[in-house]
Image 1: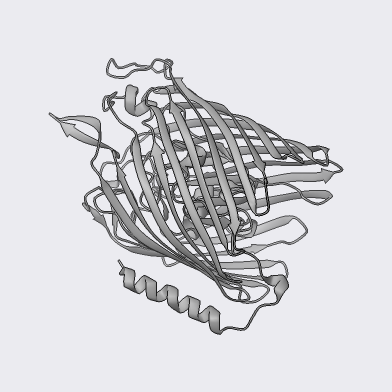
Image 2 (image 1 turned 135 degrees about the vertical axis):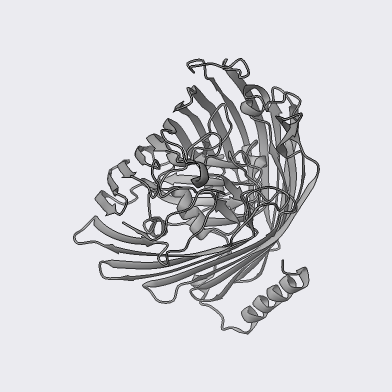
Length: 606
């Protein structure tokens, strides 16, 4: 862990580099915020910085993905974000599954501390409270927005560690867009993705279908999955729009078990669907947006588990500008989530299969004000109302200082929150109806610096202080969920974006965390570097991932070997809108594990 003194020195050096460099042309200078942030799906234009850094994965980066997993590409480009894996394709669900997501050490497996969004709506398994990694395909996405830090004041429970928002592809210019991507590789791996979209007058639409399969690098590690998505948008008038987004996925996979005790026929069949309908209007009084949403699932597992779950709700917000430099937002959210497992056979008396539901609602506001031309002050407050735990006050406050035309400093504090899931309260034997919500405060200082045209650096230093993290302990040989004591995480992130030429780009991200005793499934050190070059119809990209200080248990127990991976990809477009890709993953054929006992694939291609 680098000392705070070293981090301050690095910030000073970046500021000095800014002061001695040549002045940029006026038309190239803007406030150094991201052009689009994770809040774009809910509080459009209000918050360009909310309590943490924001990373945007653009469409070109999405196209470089080795497979169709959206989470895989997030891990490859965003600091402090880690996704556990155990196979060539697929993550699975239930005990021992991969797909654990952590942001700055917060998240877990199953993932309940990082909130997944689709176009701003929450997407989670209603009973278990976790996200569904196998349902998140890059097909049909325009970009992915990642908020590194708590966003509970906007989204309530589960947004404690951060937010990952999948934004649907739209056709913005008149005309049509049709394409197909084909892939084949070792282990009988195959991939087919197709899309068609268009914009005709006031109507825009985008439809996708995808399929991928593999026999896996181990016996009984087969995977096959299909996904479909649709976006429809229509401008009712120049100031009013309506749009519909929908998705469906069907995943079947096998879990081979740990290598020393391999299993056969441990299958999982996961069906997920979801949709949202949004109406927006902009007038003299400001911008108003209303959204109704829902997602649904059917899970069938080899052990007899059969569940149906749902998450449904409404969202409303209004943005108003009362005076110069001001944007004020008021909003209201309501959601109900739950489900049942009454179709399960056989049924154990130790498990509660009956239908359970929980309701939450919350009013919130956000206030942002430009002051003295260089300062942006923002504050927000959410009053989360939970039917079991009553009221939870979720504040945030931030200050941004545009020190120079290409330099922005930020400081922020925000509260994160997660209420226990139905699984943790009522379902399996570790259940505990006395659990309390997890709570956390995040304090962060950040710098965004454009060094020269095409070179941008970002630094973030943060400290997380929390309590009541839900952990499993054993008493008299029986597991039980309990709230842990207080914890403190500290760390820093460094990002460098360099557009070398008009056709080349370099992205480097480094994160260094001190996680105390909460070390399960979250590496303390992570380095990623991605170099891409585009020429004519060919796109070449090399990616490096280095992981160190990864543990298979809390309290810094069962340290996993450090590893470094090199991945290569080449994409060729023989004719318009058709793409042929070649990927080489783990090009150096390294031996490594992410989940203890599950060896990862060696050199693979597609």
